[in-house]
Amino acid sequence: MNLPRRTFLKQAFSGTALAVAAGAGLLRPTRALATTWPSWPNAAFHQKHLPVLLRELFGHRPIVTGGLHLHAPLEAENGAVVPIVMESHVPHAQMLVLVVDKNPFPLVTVVHLTPDAVGFFNVRIKMGKSSAVRAYVATPEKVYTVTRQVKVTIGGCGG
Amino acid sequence: MHIATKMKTRTSHGITEVLVLINHPMDTGLVRSKVTHKIIPAHFIKTLTVAVNHKPVVVTDMGIAVSKDPLIAVKLTHAHSGDLVTVDWIDNEGMTGHAQTHVS
Image 1 (tube, each protein chain N blue to C red):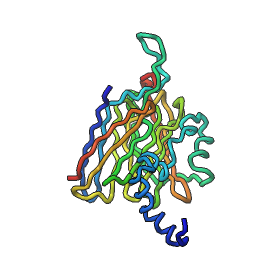
Image 2: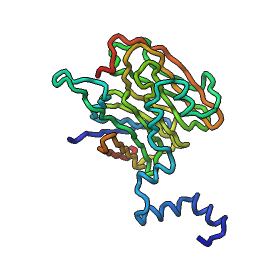
Image 3: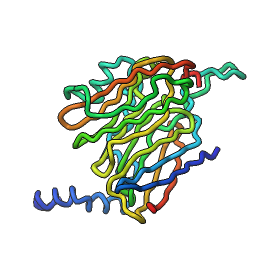
Image 4: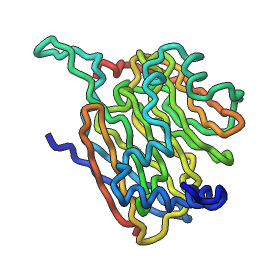
């Protein structure tokens, strides 16, 4: 491509180049999406060791307490359906993460946010037994976290 | 097998909440069938994308620990009346689902 560097960068960032490529069938929608967000984090979802999992997700960013609300029941009658709400209003939130310490695979979900989204996620999860539930919100500089203990009377990983 | 995807939006104070309900088994691959005594293979949604006017706003990666028939809510800040909100998901077997609605 023989364009001046400035023009090329402008086009690349304006999305025009991407739109043209997509229109020409060069990029399938899923691929276009994958350029914006990393693909499904296979290693993290299979990681059983919490410190390693956090390093994989957040790199070397410092993790501090606070910064978000985690609504979880103190006691869940049915571990197959535990309602969870994560909510954060920290600026530049990129990602919400939910972890259950004592599940066979601790990572539950990774929610990628854009500036048009509120740092909010409501989901129902499975818990094998009583455990700490941790929510994280990641910003470019640091990661905030809150922990709640949830007591489970009937385990849910048995489905 | 068809998996139904339902969604609705509700707006108050400039924030649009998007509610999604998918009739998906979310099998973990860790459970043995009580009838056949064989492991039920994992079958779960991996990625769910909420987009406004075809622009992704929230992209969620999920594992096996999300409950059967996922009910998920996210909130959007800059959705306006008439905007097209779409939900698309793909599971580990390559099955996909889609739903769309306009912000009221």
